[in-house]
Image 1: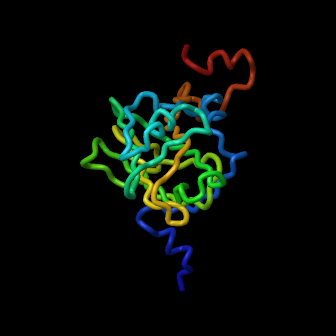
Image 2: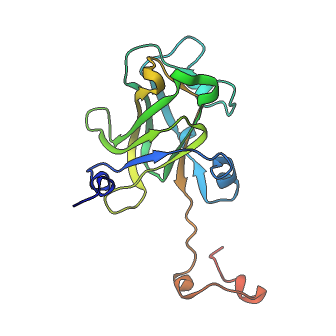
Length: 201
């Protein structure tokens, strides 16, 4: 007999139950360490709806006290369109169930494509009363970061069956190219004299 958990793991779309731990997820720290770079600033952002004064500017102002508030029927959409094909490693969303309650997303769908007409779902995430950053890895069928012209973040349901949604911040991360010389795969340099040859300058 196949346990229910195994059946869930076999779904076409990977379904994840995430309870966010703010101490573990810190996109700012990852950016400063050079692991990823934030590429949302290279994109054009649009929303399916918003209350006046609660739109894209609030979603991207690096302030956890402001937020986007939708104003319409589900699903609520955040559209991120890049001018050129961009590698996306993960999407970080900041929500606060303690403050927003029924406005907090409970299910989020991530879609990717070249434009609005060919978007395909690449990830679905269930959120359990999240407070803080939630990191959603975005991968292609080969388990590599996707390359895309467009990302759409769709809130398909809210906690307590709420109608509108609050999202406080969104960051889009691209991996930094940390490859150096081909022989790096055989080990790393340990002495100061050798480390000067560890990358092409």
